[in-house]
Image (tube, rainbow, N blue to C red; front, side):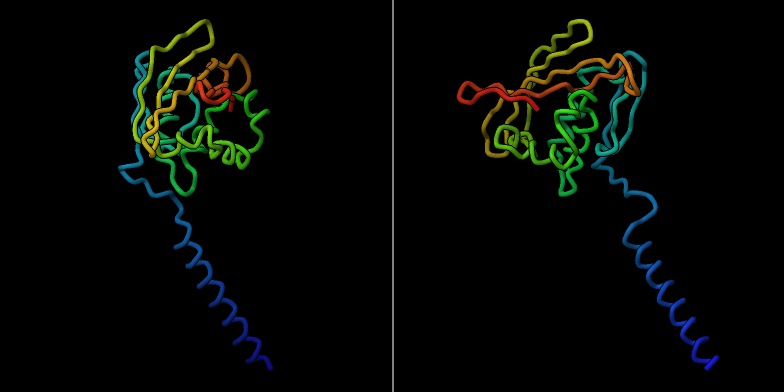
Length: 186
């Protein structure tokens, strides 16, 4: 009887080790950093250089409003099946905006709405002149969607005055500017 229990223990140990190895292979300790996913941003003010994978970018005091918009556009242009682009945009949403946006999964659905779906994996974009008044910035961006349509959006950013993001530029809203459709905010 004792030999049977000993063999059973060894079998369970072997199965456990195999499962750990499979888990380790499935989920590596560090995310893979492909060169094509790296983004480099340089801040003129602070002489700061950020090298980061787009999906891991978060607000920073060293980023200008123009850089914040560029980061979000680059992320949306390269959105993947894990929605890393949408997650990056959500990371740059101001805390007050997140109250109305709801959780990340709700935001993912909102971005797929016909009003905003041209922003996902778009072909190119053009920016107008940025207008900055006090702690608010406005930027018109015309996106050429994957289908070829050109859609204008107004990005509205605010410099945060309190909380953990104090001093960071974050998105308050993105409004589609279209004469055929009522403007809405996300």
